[in-house]
Every structure is written in C-alpha cells, then in structure tokens.
Picture: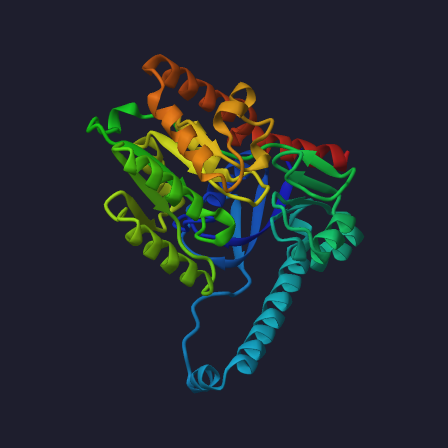
Length: 378
C-alpha cells in the first residue's frame, strides 16, 4: 500500500534560485506515494501531478499601508511587531492545515526547518504519524536539538551532514536530477579561455575572497580565464559583502575576468554548468552543497575545501581538495586541472558523474526515504 505523505518546506517555486530544486523532489515523491500534501511558508509557480496538493502558510509580498510606512520611519520596534504578528499567522495556519488534513497523510517529511518538527511533533506523535526531518547543515541550535527528540527519523546527506549524535540518523545522500544535470560537451566554446564557475549564496561563509585572490595569481601568470560567480545575497547585511567583493575585483583589475551573474533559477542552471570547464567551491559550511553534486553530474571536475566532500570524491579526494583559505593551494589546483591531458579530463568527467548517479540520484534518493518511512510504519 502506497504511503500518503505530508511535506513541510520553506518555499515551493520552480523559478527560485535556491529552493527551485525542491520542485523536482516533490515530483519524485508523487511517483512513490499515493498522495502528497505540501505545506509551505511561501508558494510561487509550480507544475505537479494531480496527486499533489500545495497549501501556503501565507508568506508573500506585503502591500504597504500607512502603518507600514510609519514602521519604516520609527525603526526596529515596529519591525519586530510585524515579525511577531506574521509568526502568529503562520503558526495558526500550520496547525489548521495539519489538523484539517490529518486523515489524508500517514507520515511527515520536514525539509531543513526543524522548527516545524518542534511545532508539530507532539500532535503527530498523538496521531501516530511517523515524522522524518531532512537536515544537512553544520548549524546546531536548540530547535534542532528539540526536533531530534521529536522526530522518528533524521535524514541527512553524509555522515558529517548532521552534527548531533543520534541513533535516528539515516544517511541517504542528496537528490540530484541526473537527467537534467548531465554532460553536454557540445555547448562548450573552444575559444582558448578556461571557464570556471562557482554557484552559491553570496555570504562570507562561502569565502569568495580566496577564489578572487587565486585568480589574481593565475591571471598575472598570463593564463586565459573567465570566472562566473552565480548567486545572490540572502540577507540585507550581505549586500555590503557583495559590494566589497566587487570592489576587490576592480582593484585587482579582474573586472574583465570575474563576473557576478546574480541569481539564476535552479531549473536554468544546468546550461551554465555544462558550458564550464571547472567548478570551484570555497564553502566553510561543513555540509554537502547540492551545487557541487549538480556540477559533478554535468561531468565537471570540482575543487573544494569543504570537509563534507571527504569520502564523497573517492580516489580523487587528494587531487580535488585544498586547505581552507589557502589561495596559493587553490591556484595550484586550478592550474593542475587546466594542464590535464584530454584523456585524464574525460576520465574525471565520467567518474564525477558516476559518483552522483550511484550515490545521489534523485529516484534512488526518494526511494530510500520512502523505504525508511515504510520500515518505521511496519
């Protein structure tokens, strides 16, 4: 008997640059389940089969009124009032939906937001709904600790993806659509310029300074490079960081080499990867960045300092990893990849994709999660 699943997530929007990938996850869940109900904080554009229902907690663009205008003038107190009122509204809708739909789901899958397990954990236990939390990030806080106690299963991408000791932890890899993210060598330009791409939120934890400094070393050596940094700031305070990065690029006379592309929808990111020669990730998050695996699925070699990739890259770990913030080591690794012979490059391309297909393919990934729920229910 197929499972009826309730999914809780932050956003459902096929056009979103960060969470657009989750649209594919929901589609795949729909293939494995009798029905899927999705409760999201915010919804945008989506296209799901008939057995999927989407319910929004109500977040969306606010139409400014006189009270809003006064709040902007008066400062933080009003902002906190608005935030508190919004949280009350979202919580009310959350409880309304999980109660109203309680006969229409057997299990609950919460994506990345442990606060929903904290809110719904006790009712779900009373109603005998098995609850799974997907969490793959280095941050550990009180909400996560409480969620670990209330959840039946903790799904994560790698052994290091969940930083609490828990017998509930189940490593299932990541969920990458390998039909969308696949090599297309015919779209690469043969113009003699080595194209590097880096994708991620523009934030200090992503350490773009190390990449910029490494590129400066290589550019001074006369190498023909282009670097595309894809991503947007997630918070207003990160705007200054982006401004500082652009200033840094200009001061090093790299404006013609390094380009900040801004956000690109996840559904449109594959061609950007397929036309590149190398993916570089400087992240210090200690979690397996999905963008790295998407690049690998496209056959790209990847360079990273993120310890979450240890054990993921197989025999290539030594060749493709460098010490954090070590700009000289990163420059040397980029030069190493550039100097590889065609045969070696093709071998790496095949092996990078095989790692993702075998361990992180979307169909197997969702199958593992559904199987884990079935075992718990049994």
